[in-house]
Image (tube, rainbow, N blue to C red; front, side, top):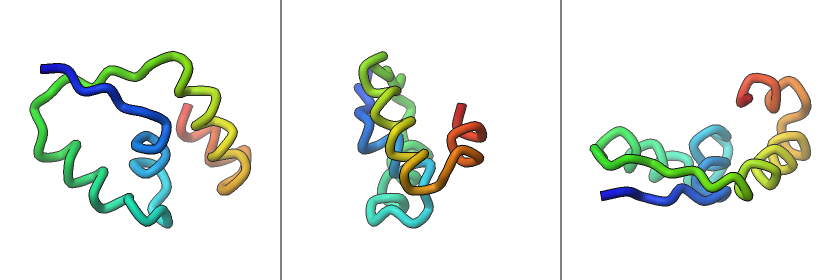
Length: 62
């Protein structure tokens, strides 16, 4: 089965300060499913990372 990863999940995976970080890490580490990242989610994740972490965090993510 394929799981669609939205911008919220991607942001939570990357940002350890996010309230859902542990849940996202747990889901990804325990799941054998394929994660599908829609191209429309990437600009939003990039905006959120730049806003909350800065350009260095965005560069590391990319």
